[in-house]
Length: 299
Ligand code: IPE
Ligand code: IPE
Ligand code: MG
Image (tube, rainbow, N blue to C red; front, side):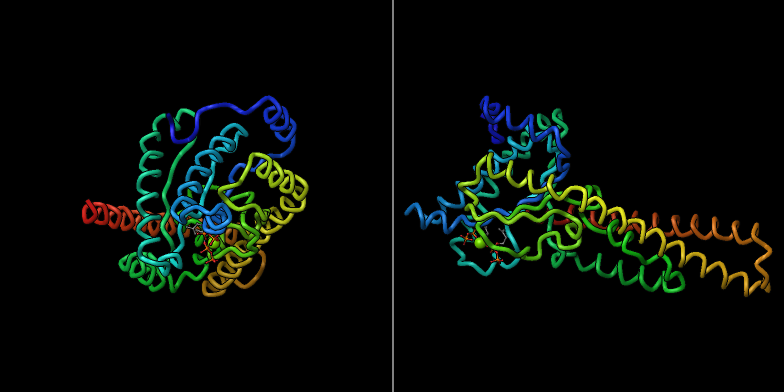
């Protein structure tokens, strides 16, 4: 049996899924799967059993997402803070993750046919030292190009840069905090906090969260659009200020030479793009090297 459970929705679930799908759907959903230990206590089972059921619930939730046409899911399975738990619990969680995620990765080829892609992300504090150095070098190299440093560059430097930001973030178990999860990427996402404990999460809980996303859709969209517009405007303003300075250095003071101004503006944008691309390529190489070394150490 596939880890992402086989099987379609029941008739009533399918009926509701079709109604929901008539509205705007989130393309990317992030989950903070919380409440495994409380669930174990509630059901008088071992803590490890709660975690195991939590992983199984993830398999079931991924299937629902697939059925709802949600192609991108990011989950918070373990945080840096979680290393502070007892060794026994951390080891148990790592064993589960190894078992369940390796099964998921084995199924990658099959999932690709459904347009599903799997990526395992690390946490920012785990940024390898040489990448920190690279960023430091980049800061030095670009000190004459302050225009290069922008929020959009920061987006491109993150591990998540290949994905659109989550449209919807769901945290279960009634906790209303993000615990450092995707803080930057969720600034314009719909945040839904649900009281259900993660191992008890149901298709109906997911539908409720999507409905809340749909109810807030136009406000979210508006906020996202005006933020992007503001970013573009700020970049344009910085570029124009740079060009004005250049023209002043060249001794062009009047506003008359608009052709020269336009050429410089184009040149400035193209050169920035070139610098950014080569920086991102170097970052990508460093990352690939780092992961290669990490895999050869842990092999
Ligand atoms: C979430 O459930 C799973 C992990 C953090 C690994 P918890 O283990 O935090 O369970 P609660 O929140 O204490 O019930
Ligand atoms: C953190 O879990 C996020 C995960 C569910 C993996 P915790 O339940 O430990 O959250 P905090 O640290 O109490 O916020
Ligand atoms: Mg918790």
